[in-house]
Image (cartoon, rainbow, N blue to C red):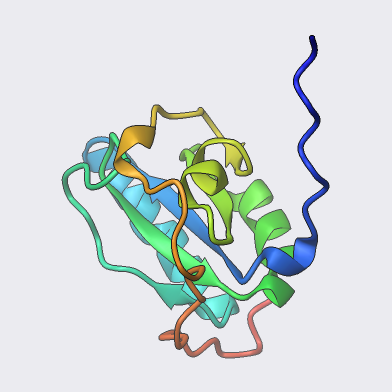
Length: 142
């Protein structure tokens, strides 16, 4: 017997997005710094702290960029064109962190391993984008 299909999920369940920018070694760290500066100049996002060692489900050092759903249409294409060869996981934030990271995300650059067992299957509420900590100049072309 075939498994029952999953119900269609509404995009309204997406509260925000995360982009995890991975780096490995000094050269990629420098590229990640330049990318981070470019993001901060152009987009109202919440830039997370640098993780110089793997943390949580991530198997490489990284930093996180949290952003509102309305920015997806501009930030993600900009990252597609400007990711500097770095690996970036972009995933929605719903109430299901494991599924968001492992099955609903998209990758720019090389896909990296994730430790899914370190992510909860579900949570009471989805992570929001948080208060932006960037102040784009507004004159920098996207």
